[in-house]
Structure formats: structure tokens, C-alpha cells
Image 1 (tube, one colour):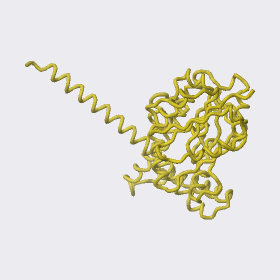
Image 2 (spheres, rainbow, N blue to C red):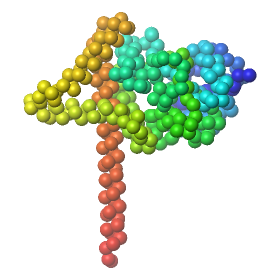
Image 3 (cartoon, rainbow, N blue to C red):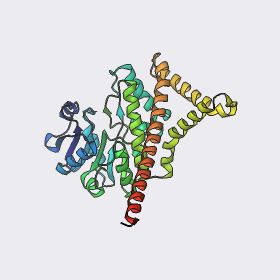
Image 4 (cartoon, rainbow, N blue to C red):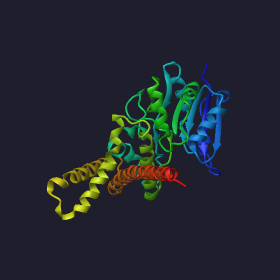
Length: 321
């Protein structure tokens, strides 16, 4: 017998839920499918609330614009036949009928240069396999309800990166996370460069907030954009005093960006993409780095402020009347 699946979709008030139509067209028994639409302005809190209301054996978290394939629920249920699997996820792909910029963003994020090991979130990479938290994405993530409850759900003080933190806890608990490259959803990317910049600035801030809670050597690679951005600023300040050796990292970065852009342009047969891809890579890396640095500065200043307030309070308490 197939397990009952509870689909949980967080949505902002008044926003249409595009995911509904694809769910109704899914090849799955209606009496074994539960759809919960949770309105609010905090996706982590909304997902946790939906999980508490759910009656299914499997919780399937989608975004309001995540369009599943007709066989997605059957494929998902099949993975849970073995008790060793506690969570399953797959990539989020950009629809082919999206505007060129949106498609190019999806193509860029599907490369190592665009998202490193997280590229599996944006492109079907490899075979169905045990995965790490870096390979699954929150808009296409499922988990056994009992496992979700045992872990305590999503951290409601963390957004974005809340799914990365949750699946990291899952793996540290000894549970198995599965990545299925064929368990895809279709979902639009940002449609303007400004929106893309805001997105990756937020991702950078969320990443640092997560790293302060669960830092490991494997996550240190995500500091690279901040280090690179600091290096660029240092080079700009030095200006004419730069030597050829000092400028070499910038030249290497430019060469990698150019070669990857040419590869993507040829692969997806888009001449315009040859001009778009370099801009996208720079925005992704620079804004992610800015987010990391910005969150670090915010945390440092907040800690200094609290220390100053505490010292002022203690000094006033020590003064005689």
C-alpha cells in the first residue's frame, strides 16, 4: 500500500498557488494525498505549522510555484519502501518557456562555477544516491513525518538556508538522505538582475547565520565569495601598485568565467547568453560575498553594542549613590 503524502506549501497572503494544478494532475490515489496551503510571511514557521496539521506518513515540502511531474508522487513514495531512507529530494529546474534571462540563471546555477556542489539543486546531476545537505533544495524536499518531528522541524529563526540546516541535522543524527535527479520540479528563476542580486545577498546572510550554528570544514568553501570580494576591494584600493603576480587570481577568475560562459552558450545554443552569463556569475559571487560580509559586520556590531550596554549597566550599578 502506498504511503499517505502530505504536501505542505507555504505562501504569502494573496499570492496564487501555481503548484496546485500540477498536484491535482498527479498520478496518485486522491485518498492518499493531502494538500496543506499555509499562508504567512515566515516559510520556516509555515512549514512547521503545516507539519503539525498533517496526517500523512510522508511530508513533501514545495514552494507555491513548484510544479511537479505527473509521476512525482509515485516516484517519491517508491523511495520510502525501505526504512533506511528518511528524506528524499530532487532538483528545481527552470521551465523552457521562461524568458531568456531566467533560463540563463538556471543554466548558470547548474554549473560548479555558479553553485559548486549545490549545482545538483538546479540540474539533474548523476544517479539516484545518498546525498548531503548541499544537494537538496527546500522547494522539492520530503521527509518522514516521524523523523521530522523527532528532529524538531525547521528552525524558525533561520531563513533562508533553513532546509540546509535541517538536513544537516538529519545527517548528523545518522539518518539517510536520498537525492533523485529525476524527482524534479519546474520553478521560475528571478526575472531581473536586481532580484537575482537580492536573492544571493540573502543567501549569503543565511549561510553565515547557519555556519555560526553548524560550522564544519566542508562548509568553509562557502566563504570563498567573501574572500574573493575582499581581495578585489584590496586590489582596487592598491590600484597602480599591483604587480602581475598580484593580479593573477583576478585573471584566472576572469578566464574561468569566460570559458564557462562560452561552454554554456554553446551547450544551450544561445548567442545572447555569451553576454549574459559573465554578468550573472559576477552578480552571484559578489552579492553572496556581500551577504556573508554584511551578516558578519552586523553580528560583530551587535555583539559590540551589547557588550557596551552591559559595561554601562555594570558601571552604573557600581557607582555609589
